[in-house]
Figure 1 (cartoon, helix red, strand yellow):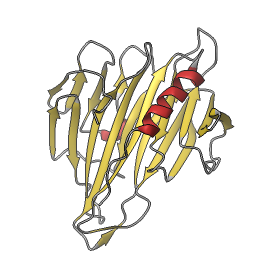
Figure 2 (cartoon, rainbow, N blue to C red):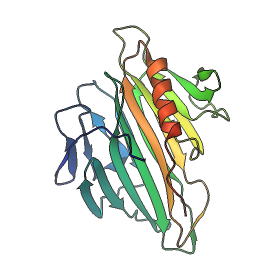
Figure 3 (cartoon, helix red, strand yellow):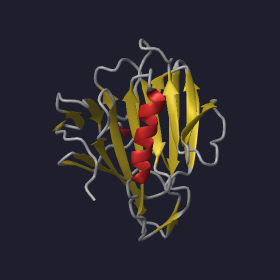
Figure 4 (spheres, helix red, strand yellow):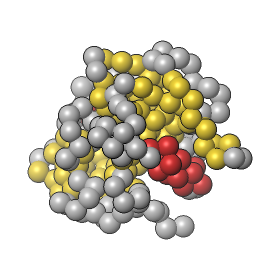
Amino acid sequence: MTHPSAPVGWSLAGTVASTAASAPAATLDLATPAAGLEPAGLGRGIRLLGVDLRGPCGPLERWIRGADLIAVYEPDDPRRLRATALWRPWLAPTGVAAWELLLSAQTALVSSDSALAVVSEAVATEAAWGESTPAGWRWTRAEPGQPRPARATSVLVRAGHGADARPSLLVAVHPDDVRHIDIDRAGDLLRVRCWLFSTAIEKGQLFRSRVLAAVGPARDDEAWAGGLGSAFAAAPPPLTT
């Protein structure tokens, strides 16, 4: 199956990656993976698909392959993890910019803690849990610190509903990969942290998981977010061996 990515070219200057001027435009410093992607022209405070490795960690390797930006990390901690992050654009409706992160982990130990977090944030006043139902996507108000509803696989973060409101942010985990999602507030930012690989990982295993983040207009955010959520959920999941 062809991956539904949008055509885009990455460039690398040291550890800083950037896309071509055509949308979706963004920059990412691979030396600080937790900071994530910074989309261009969308205002202050939007950071997407950062990888929290539980401490400072620069890339061992980095390269570009078509529309994919790839970096390999080995955090300096007792877990002996090797994490590979692949960021790519995702095809989205006009006016919406979307990216996917494919994250994998393996270890050199007989058994290790595999948990990693993918972090996105935006200036926002409210959030909603999203879940797919036979009647379409259902959105229910989410509060920071609230446990994730059992069927929720996405979060919609917003600063209002009108035409002049700041862009809304969608964060979605593939339904086969969702483990735990936290929402917390830091000043005027709402931060969404998607925890992946909640089980122990053994030597020889390779865990993979995916997270989607998209930014688009607030006025019809539930419509475009639901459409993207459905497309992402229908895409085949990565294999875990």
